Image 1 (cartoon, rainbow, N blue to C red):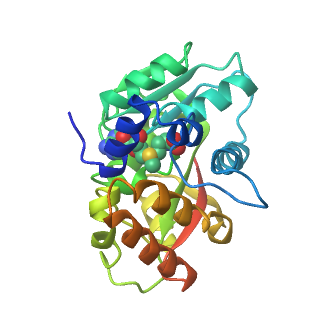
Image 2: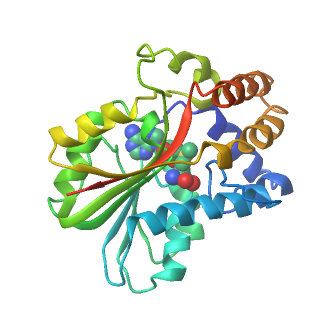
Image 3: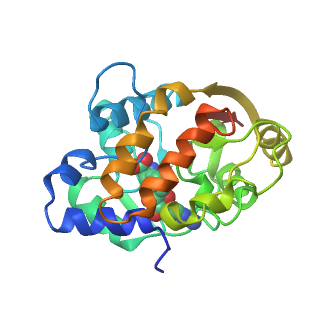
Length: 255
Ligand SMILES: C[S@@+](CC[C@H](N)C(=O)[O-])C[C@H]1O[C@@H](n2cnc3c(N)ncnc32)[C@H](O)[C@@H]1O
């Protein structure tokens, strides 16, 4: 199945051609960075990954599923910190999985949809979803599956774009489609309600919008060379975030 993600088409093509800027930036992660100083984009992406790993409180020996795993960057970071943990990556895009398998041996990479996960009930202690849930056809279906595959005491930890309470549904979604593909955003109270419906509890929510904001300039500049609309989309999105119209949060849900 070929998912429509214009930004990934560019990144895959540039990596294939050996473009050093793309190789340096995306040798692990494909997500926003968390900037605290003058880090490189790749360092900032690693820092965001670490914030999420810390929030999930992963323990040695636990089985971890990374949904929407991209090139396997989060799992690479986890493998360095938890070499004995069973690590699984799920992605809908076989092209990305091919790269992930090359880069990250010793991890089980599986092709599939986050909303129809091909795993038995209660098979993971932690489920991570790093900057990908806004692409899924249904947050509700994903939450049902995450809940189903989690073991008692487990948690689902993710990062996502969130809108302030009272934002008309769908108002953000269409501005970004031509660069980011399907991209939806919901409010934190909607997340709390959604989690409760599937017997999960929102236990942490941390707004890191100021830290991720520099990511727009970097991504817009790089992707804009190959898709001119990327510059416009990222400028608009950055403006939305600066004005408080959209935020970026780390969220944890416990079973
Ligand atoms: C912004 S990237 C993040 C990749 C990775 N988590 C990272 O942080 O490097 C979004 C990812 O979500 C994946 N994705 C989109 N829709 C999906 C779905 N329905 N099921 C599984 N993965 C999906 C994409 O293929 C892509 O790898």
